[in-house]
Image (cartoon, rainbow, N blue to C red; front, side, top):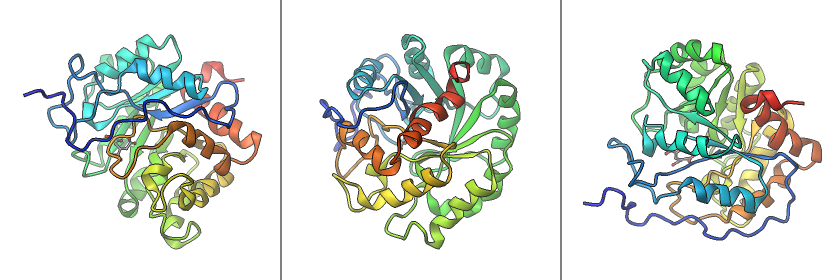
Length: 299
Ligand code: 0GY
């Protein structure tokens, strides 16, 4: 059996995205994207819940250049489990233009953390999304946070909105920056200023170490492309209220998209709708990701 064959029905990523009309600010960072395989060289994790199509580093660099980004933050996806070899290989190939977020076991050793740091890793990801992975024991997060704090690392946490009440105190108490993927996956058929999203907003308002990624409209939207209009008020309000704690990424190559595959150029053109001024755009795309991933380059 060819274990690299993607799941039946897997949508291929957009081979030739449009060139965005929106000119990204100099130094812009695509702060959420993935590298998959190639499976022949970097096999997918035996415990994975999906098998993607290969999305190797060379294709990511081509996308970066086509869209006008200068740097990438590559986030370990669940299909590679705790095997960070594809991620590390990409980071080593990037010539300093990529940093990474890895996934490790709760009892990761200091030597492994140091090796990941040398390769360019600056954070660890934990997913509480049950369809994607076995979820971590909550006590793992504070224990790991204490270990990575001296390295200046942060945590990236992925969960869906119905799980926030249960995770709230855990996230609120963490002693390192906590970056939440995709605004905690709100139900965008509800109002952005309604009670469901209020809890997420409160988490950021009351806990200065909590950040949010505000991309991924294609994954959250019920109204769909091209405008993803229903996601705009959610992302726009988070950018407006927390301009110094937001990140944006393409989410290329868009795993598990079942309805459509977005045009990455059109996703970049969506940015000014959620960050309407040059100052907000610079914070979202340059200053904030540099602070987390390239603090040595900060102005
Ligand atoms: C994303 C979202 C998804 C997948 C993963 O690690 C992953 O497998 O994050 C998803 O299916 O929602 O951010 O790429």
